[in-house]
Image (cartoon, rainbow, N blue to C red; front, side, top):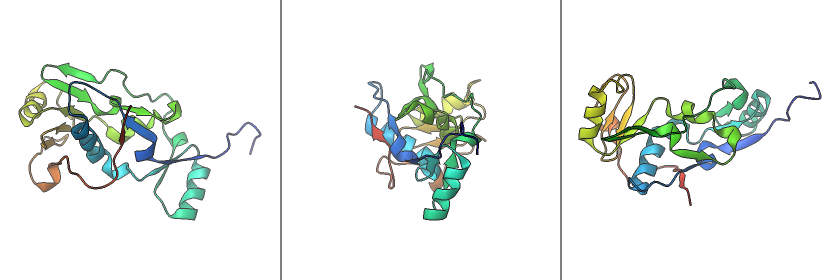
Length: 171
């Protein structure tokens, strides 16, 4: 490998690399639960900077790995989380702070076009709006509307007592 190639580095699991930014307009415990619920399929995924570091980690631990070099280099999460102020709708990918700036490109891949709202009613109001098409909507009171518009059923409800790995809440 050329001398200028970066050394392979393993950063750790997704849930340890991001913290939820403090907000005063929502219940932080419930927001953390909602974001952890949305990210659940990727929470234990190990992030690495190169494919070779990811492969080595996978061979050693059997863990699911995700190399930063496979993401488009210009990917940056949106900075402003507010999509709508009334009713409040927040971009999930803009609600967390990475432990290091190099992890930031993972946020849009973890959350996609997910929006967090306060209530089931707000979720349906946002879904009907021009910005609600093709967006996953998670209401802090438990309603989940998939990007295709489907909702209801046990797989589309989250509770604040959700089990499993969680993000830390910022100080």
